[in-house]
Image 1 (cartoon, helix red, strand yellow):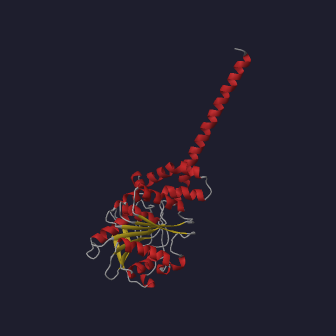
Image 2 (tube, one colour):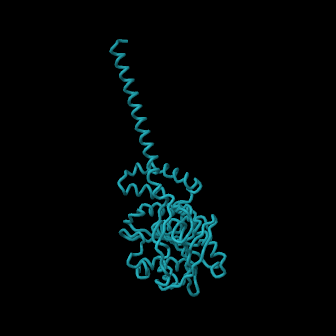
Image 3 (cartoon, one colour):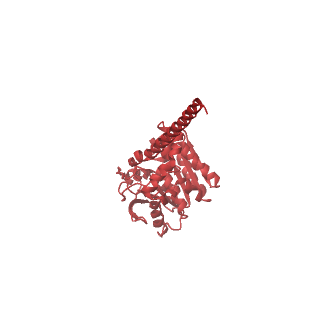
Length: 321
């Protein structure tokens, strides 16, 4: 072998080593970056407790009984019960991740009462007057719904009546999870729900300008971070897993096409999973960025929003007449 040939082979070998080292270094940097995304961002959401402005039922033209519920994991919850004459059932009502308090939904309770439904408004853990040290993205809050269901199924006036669980935003996801775990829930109204917390996290990163591919690659790291925080068993409690357990119990899913808090893609994921499992699903889609679906001007009196109120009341009438 000539010296020139040997030199060329040596150069090629060195070039391969450099390329390999470069590739390994880049892969390591990408891996570290993916690990650091949830470590850097998730603490903004974890360990949080939210204080909220409280509203009075009388301001919405309805009477409410303040009660206290206790969850299986010993969290004390503030709740309010409203009554209808000759009730057809009870609607459990939840709010979202932070604001407003569920007491802002007394207008919904009034609309339901006027149409023959009792309501049980539950302030989820770590919010307002309820106990609890931190929010749980639905992975723990579904137990708050269970506390409400346990109360209703042991109450002489309510135990023989159907239960519909209605929630907005994170509450919309929570009622799906709860229904998947609790056969006592007879129907669900889910407003602007996410499919899973990790999916919502990734979708919001994409909305902030991060490439979608990076978000997809980061999903297992987000779930791992959540698993270490809440326990890996908690990861199975997601709306996208819960919805496939509904069987023929009806669900009304509501979303807006331009939602900037929970993107419309989350609705599409949930709907796709429901259709895959032949779930009895109805939908109501509103154009624009209307996270609460009911127009803001009608929020305190949702009956004024004819399309929204007719969708909700029609769903209840059709399935629980």
